[in-house]
Image (cartoon, rainbow, N blue to C red; front, side):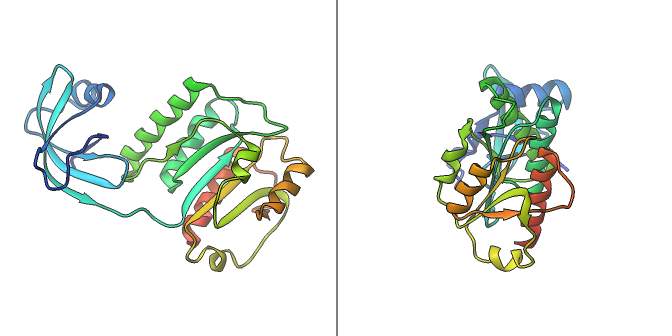
Length: 237
């Protein structure tokens, strides 16, 4: 199996110009870690669903130059799943991003709530984006999980979606989720901080049309709840 690399600038499917250049990090990985040689076959994906069969042409001043021989494209799965969640402490956040990407989450939005503890800065957001790329390479997914900047709780409620759940131990355990998800285009899952959502936040979410959802009789950590929710929705859809 050919080694996979992320390349945001894949050529047009008609291949009028079949060459593209890998970024610095991908070039380092190809040259120093995997020791990809000239003429070796590689697979490139641009994070939007396009994948290219290619071979390494050379290592240039600005990165590894690849010649693409074929392009294919895959449509994204529906519904598009957004996880809007408080960020857990330490390395738990990195692992959450990795697993959400593997499970098929389309977009992660860190949110601030009344009980939030972690407020991720720009450096952490960029780290999440790098983790999402590495996870996509490892798991074989063709679309990158989008990582947003920090949003306020109210910003998410104002977004348009046709299926929204807010996870809370005080929620319901609906038996008809599969029917609810049928033909939906965009689902948003909201996960609170370790202190949970406040009564006011739950009330505002319910007023915005969100279903209060209890997935387990136990109190789940942020990363556990997020990954479990995405796994369930992606399976049922």
